[in-house]
Image (cartoon, rainbow, N blue to C red; front, top):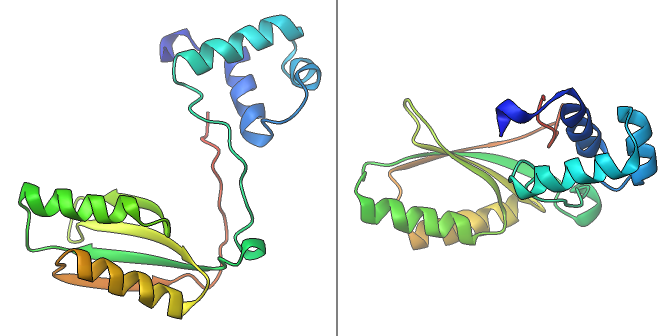
Length: 153
């Protein structure tokens, strides 16, 4: 699909990443096309899986989840069973906003959103009760400088 994406599609995607709730008429005007072709392009982008979801982005402070931790996990177990258990534990925890398997010294990094340090400790205790972890290092974010869901298309 990437080879079929043209400048209008890119403009539509940029605009939708800013505000997917804007009226179709306003979107069409911004990208320099009429409503029906823009709607058809959006539908094709959805059908192709380029547009995965349309979601509401919540303010974590206003919903009581103002504390962000980055959790660096090292494991001494690289067997499939351990990995499946760890991934299941991570995927089942709503506090985990992102999880990445890394190349290098650290095996995984998790981005956790919780109310406070006490809530993080409850998350940590639950995680280590579900799966054995060799080493965990946690870092609390003092200030979020930039956060975006928009890809640089």
